Amino acid sequence: MSRIFGAFGAPNSAVELNAVAGRQLHGGRDGTSVLRGDTWSLGCNRLAVLDPCGGAQPYRCPRLPGIAVVFDGEIYNHHQLRRRLRARGHVFTDICDGSVLPALYAEHGTRFAEHLEGMFAIAVIDLRRRPRLVLATDDHGMKTLYHHTAPDGAVRFASELPGLLAFGQVPAVERAAALDEYLSVGTCADDRTALEGIRTLPPGTTAVANGFDGLRLHRRTTPATAPASARTTAPATGPVSDGTADLGDILRGEMARLTRADVPVCGVVTEGADSHLVNAMATRQLRELDGSPLHSFHVVYRGRWHSSVCAAARRSGTLHHDVVLDPDELVELLPRTIWHLGQPHADPAAPGRYALFRAIRSAGYTVALTSAGAGELFGAHERMRRALTTPPDRPWIGPYLDALASVPRSVRTSLYSADYRDYLRFRGSAAERLAETLHAGGADRFSTLAAVETGWRLPAHHLRQIDHVSTAWSVEARFPYLQPAVSAFARTLLSRPTTGDTPLFQTAQRYLPAGTLRRSARSTDVGADELLRPGSALMDLAQDILRETHLDERWDRTAISNLISTQARHPAPDTAAALWAVLVHELWRQELRVLRPAVLHLALPEPVAA
Image 1 (cartoon, helix red, strand yellow):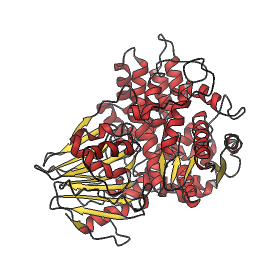
Image 2: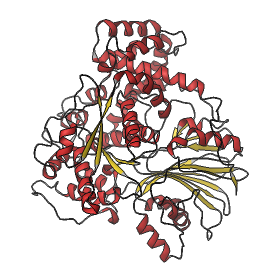
Image 3: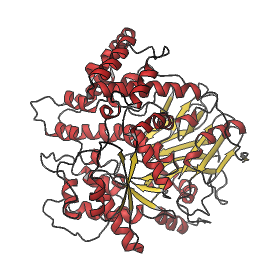
């Protein structure tokens, strides 16, 4: 895994490239390297997960002069690709997964990403014939890649937004509509960011820059069935009564690939059936491999927030560790989390996850298995289940949008200034535009919801958060439910709404010890109402920050003052959620002000001339 960066169509100085690398160093502490020419550059900060002694980036092959590649992520089918490419005459000097990329690109050109299974953000410089830059992301957006195209057509990119802003030509200008998007869905929607002209490369996308006309994006078609290499023929171990037993077999096959690393692997566990199932499968795989157990981690808050995860995880066979976090510590952790996220994110669980990965790294682990994506793929979120089971003659879009919002509509509109409300009336609010998208889906409610949940909310809201808070501590998060075989299986189930247990829960019941799961498992993620209690350290921070004179002019100052007073006198979940979102936004704006100019905190290697 690496944090990558580069530019095409413009020269970059060694000082500037070192500044970009310095802001992403936490994500790859095992080596920094830069390759550059007159009008292009490629760089990476490497975190060695496979073949620590090999895998030097940028990847190049002596037989393929003119092709250079940097890569963030993991390629799980690299063994099969290496055998296939060797049969074509290609030679490899190590067994690192990314080493196959130059040869794969040479064979297939811009369609090379169609042959990859894994999570990835890739940048290719092809100097043969007419120079070009090729960028590619995996089908779910598990790895983030920010990019900016300048007026002269020059393209700059980086794995993290603070890194991209270290390029002197990339402006840090707030986007007007971003505030409403943020309050409506918890973060900026789709591939947009909170800053003008900066976007993320969408999931399943290959982008090409051929000269000075910027990037041209091509969305790859998601395969209808899983690639053959992702399938498993392991025998079923439970009764087959409703067609869902294969999910356990598929996950067992994926665990054989995702538990493979040259560094220690652990699991992140939550209350949900999806999490316990992944950890149980991983435990079984590791014990079969070398007899070692899987260590699992979960964050709990000191005080009145009690977790039952520990006992359930141990019943699943893991050696479990509760990471105990003092709520008052969030005064320090929240600004750091916001810096790593790069833009406002209203999820109160984010700083807890940041602390979780800090503990995982401190315990000596570099790879962590997570259950992210299961709720979206299998329709397990309550908001999705309600939307899918609402009768055709009853409204479902409005309640779904209310459940999606980080701040209720009635509350968020009251927080806006008169000028900003006028702006949204003219332009249309984020909720209105999303409602139009849902209406446009017609009667095919299932496909419409899947497009919203997995197409942009999952990568923008959840995967991007995990990617950034895990790499903040040089930990690679892996996503078993987002592998091709599992995703293909999930697509066959989403169109089967149910009022009972989800197929995922039913499968977990067959593969987990009795008593591990509770049918009404609740989330142990702490809410904003618990963190912003009157008299708490975070409440004091909110009062200090939000009563300053340099608040965003899009807020109504009186409304913000009333929000603070209401939460102090009569705390309530909706009020706390709004106050949390406002606090996060203003802390982000403070971080944004110090991101320029880029400050070098360490000396990095001089870029190597091409």
